[in-house]
Amino acid sequence: MWKRIGKYVMTLAGILLSSLLLQAQEVNFVASVDKNPVPLGAVFSVKFTLENARGDIKGPEFKDFDVIMGPSTSSSFQFINGKQSSTMVLSYTLRPRSKGTFTIGQAYASAGGKTYRSEPIEIKVVEGAAGAQSQPGTQQGRGGASAPAGSDRNLIVQMQVSKRSAYRGEGILISFVLLSRYNNLDLGETEFPKLDGFWTEDVKSGQVTWEPNYEYIQGVPYRKAVLRQQLLFPQRAGTIEIEPFKVNARVNRSFFNPGTEVSASSYAQSIEVKALPPGAPESFQGAVGDFKISSIMPKTQLAANDAIDLSVKFQGKGHLRMLKSPELNFPGDFEVYDPEIKDRISVSAAGMSGSRSFEYLIIPRYAGKYDIPARDYTFFNPYKGQYVTQALGPYSIEVSGEDGLVPERSGAAIARSRVEDLAQDIRYISTRSDDLQKLGSGFFRSAGFYFLAWIPLLLVLGFTVLHKKREAIFGDVKSIRRRKAHQMAKRRLSEADTAMKAGDSKRFYAEIFNAMYGYLADKLGMEKAALTKNIIKEELAQREIEKHLVQEVIYIIETCEVGRFAPVGDSSDSAFYARVMDFIEKLEAKFK
Image (cartoon, rainbow, N blue to C red; front, side, top):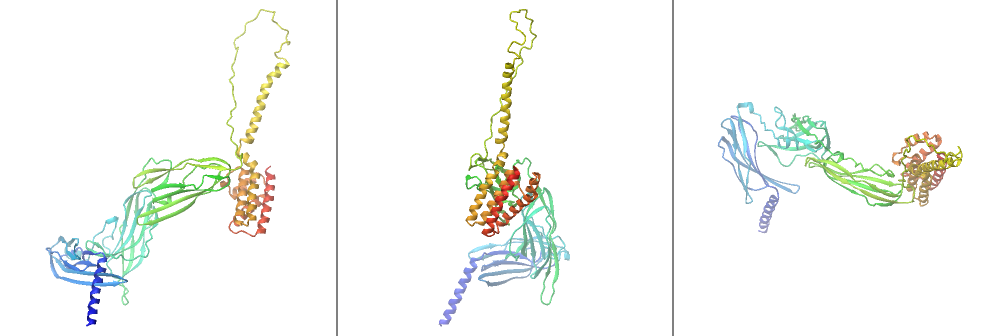
């Protein structure tokens, strides 16, 4: 008796558990046919399927068809990997009465206190055997292009595009879709189009699998798999043609049957690419998308030769990989390295989104107050259809250090006076003789007269010469840098000595590297960022520096480059430091 009660309890618990599991699944009620169009006189099947629910199904009336068989019902139940599903099917076998287009009405299903309705299906009845083969219609949703007529209609491939018209640089999603009615299909060679005229980004989707739900084309069910998805960014305006997408496969293969080879091809696609509107601002560099721009400078006060970071970040949706670094106007006394690009970009079916950052490393070389002026950055927003401009900066930086490294330029100008011509008329003849003097006895044209006349001229010439000399010495920033180069190099080398004594080999070689490059930049009157090893060789050769000294320069630079990543022992550091100090003194003597 207790065994019977236990069985009933277990059965009841199983029924309740099944009901709960089924309620947790999404309920679907769909109608399908096995062929469409249908030849006159042929038979076809129509099925009404209720998924993940238990209930009653009531079929529609078939006014334009003869019911050859049915209604018949079937059900199935599956429990796989902890997931339960069930299916109830009501099916009929029908034969059309005449040619034309007819509609199979809605069926009704009642389950869990709710009523579900299927979608009506239009059936096209054609003459005789001309339409004996099932030919499902073409699905055009989302820009899909199905297989051309005459191919195997049990295997369809589509190129689905998210839009057929876009601006140059605007993202378009293209999906390569496989639809199949075969139960057993082994995919063979797949020919994807070349996509000329587009910048492409692959959408990561993992392993290709059949989707859990069927896709219905005019009531005919197909299994669906997305073979590949890509984001396309048009690179030129006009009409861009996309070649057909082709698939080869082997179907119905078994142990005793090698199967049959089938193929399918989609239609070609065309994308209308619109040119960007005219009148783009000068600050437009080709970026297309919806972005927000921000910048961060952690500090604005620092000592000369210290480094500072400036980070400019673009965040939003669009073609982030085509963003170019902003063209900021840095002061000439700043040493600025090429910005480091950091991307945090996500590519999905929704588009490309994320951020791109440009991080500048800036080293001010001289004391003073500097301003980096504001800079506009313009991008084209395809969603608004207009150019959007955002501002970066301005930035103010105060650099402390030794006074007088860059003296202020004199704003004084040389005074000029106007010379007027007097007494140009002919003088009258005087008849008086009492005021006559002996020739040569007056002050005019005497030695004193000429002495006093030349004094102002000599003073003006002397002042001009002194002013020009002073301007040449103190007004030329490059001259100041050349004169201070040796002193600055020794100061930097003292930092290297400190690093060597502290056992910091990487910093030791970095300081010597900066000292050598800074010394050469000051002596050659060039920006440090513009110096390369080839330019250093050329500039020193033009100044007739001996070849062995030029080779020594390159050796020191290359040793520092290696030492910053693979430092050597302390004794070698000490010897190398002494060698650099000696070389600086030799080179300084050549520059004088």
